[in-house]
Length: 76
Image 1 (tube, rainbow, N blue to C red):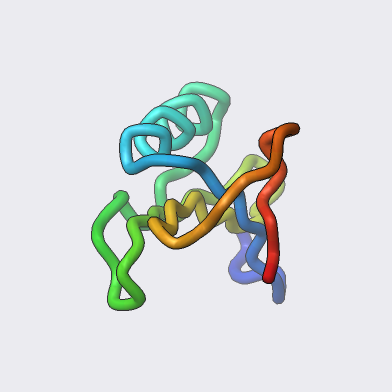
Image 2 (image 1 turned 135 degrees about the vertical axis):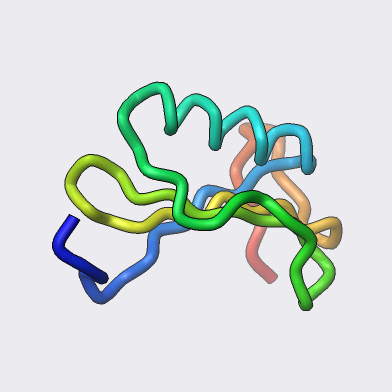
């Protein structure tokens, strides 16, 4: 990795457990864990990984988020 690419991508999930599951999938696919999952100041739970191209992803659970019938995050 050559450093920060200027953006962070986000993957929003429905539970803290799912944060760990996605982080493990990413790790097994060649990602580098940049920040282990943990509780964060805004009340949620998240971790970061860098994909093989060097892009950073946040995997986040927000207890106040909702998802629609297609499991798409609803933004308010």
